[in-house]
Image (cartoon, rainbow, N blue to C red):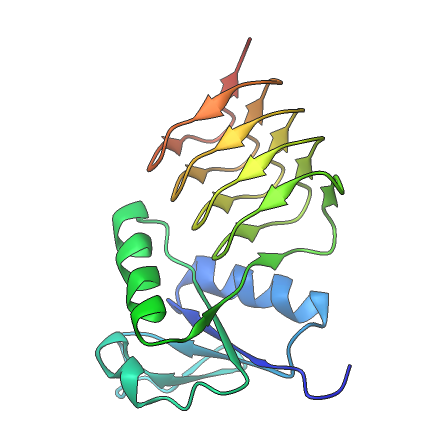
Length: 175
């Protein structure tokens, strides 16, 4: 694909780097960079550039730029996503290529889906959700906005997860 957009990830911590790796493996972006409040004192994390802090996002050229927020704090993730929208920066989702996603699933904007996730039939993932490694969602599950499902969460068919929920490692939501 010619003229791939660049990806701006807000938050250059451990989770941000995991999202960057998933994005890189997907091959959807020409360049991956970060916005982080350690900038300008810190301008690199791993092999990536930190190009701005959150307060100066408005100074970025946002043509051919997509963004995602990669912080675990649900409220902060929502605030930063609202900031991106207000600035007219296009939101995107990052889905690790080693996931299984039903073609009938509906995935919102600003969603990160890590390796080993399975998203089954008619599942709805609303904006700003984190699905960490190995999350399993059966049919007809609804994950409301800015929920965070940690490593290995399993949700039975037809269940709903409330907005801003945090489900600990290995949580099982049964019928």
